[in-house]
Image 1 (cartoon, one colour):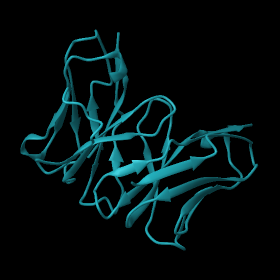
Image 2: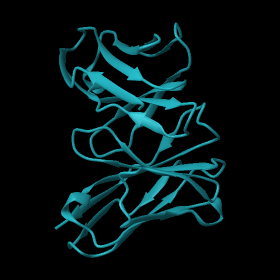
Image 3: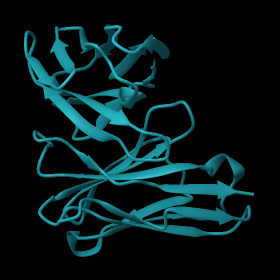
Length: 114
Length: 110
């Protein structure tokens, strides 16, 4: 297993466009998390899945954001009508159960909204 | 509300100059406290998990300790390759997510 994979690594989009990111977790991990990180800050929780069920969403997550994890495997994060404030690093992580052995992060997708 | 505060925000050390990073936390039912290292443009890399007060873990020049209110990451005789941002996070019994602090950016000069 090569770890958590995120695609694309970088995305530049115009304001108002929709974007979609993909995350492939470690295959035996049943939990998958999405975080957002801006420069100089720690990762900020967005949402997480256990298998295909979305168990929690941050109240900071606007309705322009939607995440899916069909069949409990890969996950996608879609941002509709992007705004400049959406520019950030979007990180995906996965864990086995409640993460007693750690949460493994991917390298992230850097989004720039121009 | 669960909260994590790290200090200092930035730390500059000379190679070989030992120091400590602090992570203060407030959480309803600590499940685990996590330390991560993050290099620029990359995702966080897992270092340690601590579960109960008094627990200590070591890895090379790093040693993490935990009390009921805070954790310390001790760096002994650091090298330039230890330069990175160190993130602290907690997981509570109420939720499966990690809550992160803002990080401490460490620069070690040769």
